[in-house]
Structures are given as structure tokens and as C-alpha cells.
Image 1 (cartoon, rainbow, N blue to C red):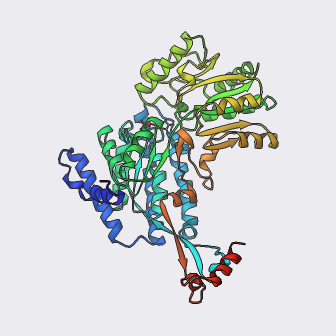
Image 2 (image 1 turned 90 degrees about the vertical axis):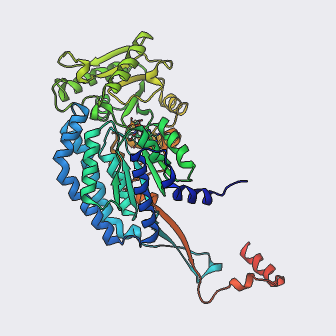
Image 3 (image 1 turned 90 degrees about the horizontal axis):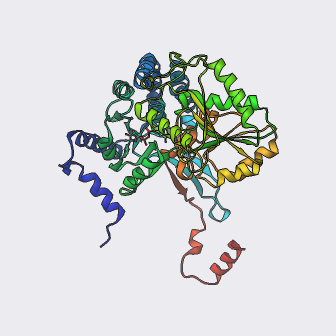
Length: 491
Ligand code: NAD
């Protein structure tokens, strides 16, 4: 006998308390979820004014907590540039809050849509409605931004939300929990902290929508758990994002912008350029420009507060191992260490390492690098670069350096990636009017700005029948008159 999805969903909600084998923390998370779920079904959705008040309160809290956030992430990473925390964890949230507040009233209104003449003067509209309770799972690399940015969209759309920040940044996660507890009632927003055990339990709850930001590997696990409840998911995952330089593009400019994207947060960014495709014989020029730029931006590395450390020993060991393997298989490693410092592993400051002669059998060309390692791959021409990208998993981001608009259009048409920045890196992520998200193994769905509001809304179609209408013409007894009418309608 097959069980209908609706029946199994209800069972999941109603049996939340009966899972006695679960740890107290998982039970408490489930209880909290169930209360939010029930309230989302019994209470009126928040008005636009109430949602604005939520956003105002969140913005005030982020501003108030800014010094503490900087300190917590710095300690979690063992060295995170305070400016990078402001630029990449806090500033995008403020931009998003300002944009959302400005446009919220318009986004939340019923959206009138055209009606076919046969059904006029009836009217049709799309009515956005809160989905209910949204689950947010966040990673460690921008722990505050990636926990709170989905929250902005979820609250704007009128939902309640629960956040599971990363266990790998414990101080930042505890601070997020404190900030949220101080700002919202636990029936509106709450934070659960913990490792894999909590994360697994979190993924299994019957959310009205679940947004997961993290690795592609865990994305599949999260989606499998969500499928049990038919929970819709937005998956913000990772992958290898290429930077492609047209042979005619000024090399110094391309290297300047690629390194800006690569060295922010020491490359621990989902949309950091992962590798570079450039013309035959051009790697040498890239290397020379890179040495100059790194020396100017980071004259020293070890005690330079502007250069972020790898966030944990696992990250350091992973990259170190992959570089050792690449070198053993014949790659040339070019670490750029301007002051020739000793960089002890315990401090986790890894120099930008350019890699020449990398081959497909090396892990660095197979896995997302997520650190300051940058393979340079020479190809015959732009079409060969396009083929290289298309033969591999769809990337989360793509960067193309070329001032020729026609060729840029060609690149845009012939490659599929989550998003693109042309003649720079990463800046698409702070354009609130652009949807942010991946495609294929880099993720599904998108958020930010109006797209985020829509992601966490049910866009309900409503048809308003008019007093005067022709619907009766389609009712039995059928006959010649209907034949004539259908003849006209289907002409
Ligand atoms: P991760 O996948 O290891 O962990 C992400 C989160 O998932 C953590 O909070 C973790 O506790 C939780 N988790 C662990 N097991 C789980 C389970 N079984 N069910 C549900 N949740 C579980 O990722 P990470 O190492 O923290 O982050 C790095 C990855 O995230 C990279 O691949 C990077 O590209 C990606 N990323 C993507 C974006 C984006 O916006 N697309 C942004 C940042 C990072």
C-alpha cells in the first residue's frame, strides 16, 4: 500500500515528540520546530510593517555586534582580517537589508497578471504568501553572512526561521545565537548549535523550505533527507569556478582582479576563482604580474593582519597534501612569499601558490580548492577554454576578462554557470537585483533581493471570476454552439 505524501508529512509532524531515542538537544530542536510550525498555521502572517520591524531589529543588532563579530571570527580562524569580516560578512548584509526594506512593500503586494480575452473581465493575480518555517544551514567560511543573509529573505517573506550555523566556527556560531536570542522571540527566529548529529536531525525536520549552504557532497545528503518530507530545498553549493583571460586582454588588469577574488579570505570563498585558463605562452606573464601584485598588497604574510589564515588544521592539511601530490606528479609549484618568511603549519598562513603544468590526474584539478592555490592552464584559444569548462561540472561562478562585447556574449551563450562577473571577480554576489545561486552540482535555486523573497514565498495563483462571464457557455448540454465557440477559441 502506498502512503500519500500528505499522510506521511502529517505523520512526521505529529510524531516529533515520539522519537524517544533522540538526544535531548535533538528533541529540544524538534519541540521548538513544532511550536513554530503550529504557530505558522494558527497565527495571521506578519504584516509588511511587522516584517520591516524585524529587518530593522536585525540591522541594529548586526551593527551593535560588529566589533564582537570581528573578534569572534578572528579567533575562530586564528587570524581573519577585520576588514574582510566587514567587507564580506557584514557589508553584504547591510546592503541586503537596505534593498529589501526599500522594495518589500512592492514585492509583498498581489501581482496582477493578464487574462486571456475568453476569461475577461475576470482578473488574475499572483499572491505571495509566507511558506511557514524555513530551515537555514550555514557553512564556516563567512559564518555570519551565510547564516543571516537567507534569514533576511525568509523574514521579508513573512516566515519563521531556525538557523544551524557551522560547528567549525564555534565562537561566531555562539555569537549568532546570542544576537538572535536578543533580537527575536524564539517563536520567530531561533538558532541551534551543534555538530553532525544536530545537523542531521535538522535536515530531517519537515521544513516548509530548507536552504543549505555548503559542500556539494553534503548537499546531496541534505536533499535526500528533505525528500522524505517533500521539503523544497535551495542548495547553495561549491565547485571549481574558472577565470578565463582573452589573449588580448591586458594581463596586469586580469591578474589584479583575479588575485583580489582569490586572496580575499585566503581563497576560502565559494565563488573564488578556482583556476585560470589563459593563452599559450601567457602563464609566464601572469606569474610576473602576480608576484608584483602580491608583494604590493601583502609585503609580509605571517603577522600581516590583512592576510587571513586557513580556518582550521583540516583545511591546511588538505591543501598541503594536494600540493604535495601535484608536485610529485610533475606540477611546478610557485608559492609567492614576498618576504621569504618561514610559515609554520601551526599558524596556517598559506602563501598564494600558483601551479603550472597541472594535469587532470591531480586532485587540484578535480576538487574545489577553497584556498590560496591557483592552477594556471594554457589553452589554444577561447573556444578551447569554453570546451574545457563544458567538459567539466557546471561551475558556481565564471569570470571572463575581455573588453570585446561580442566575444563576451559568445562566452555567456556557450557556458553555463551559476553566475558571471565580466572583467572582475565575485562582484555579482553583492548585486541585490541579481539572483545568486548555482546550477548542476553547484546548487539549485537562488536567493538575494526579490529572488530571495520569492524563494521563501508561496506564489499563489488566484483567479477572480467576474459577475458577468462566459463560463456557462462551456457547460452541458454540449453541442453545436460549443463547437462554434471552441472553433473560435482554438483558431
Ligand atoms: P559543509 O558542507 O562541510 O558544511 C555545511 C553545513 O552543513 C555545516 O553547518 C554542517 O554542520 C552542516 N552539516 C553537516 N552534516 C550535515 C548533514 N548530514 N545534514 C545537514 N547538514 C549537515 O561545508 P563547509 O565546509 O562548512 O563549507 C565549505 C563548502 O561550502 C564549499 O564547498 C563552498 O564552496 C561551499 N559554499 C557555498 C556557498 C554558496 O553560496 N554557494 C557559500 C559558502 C560556501
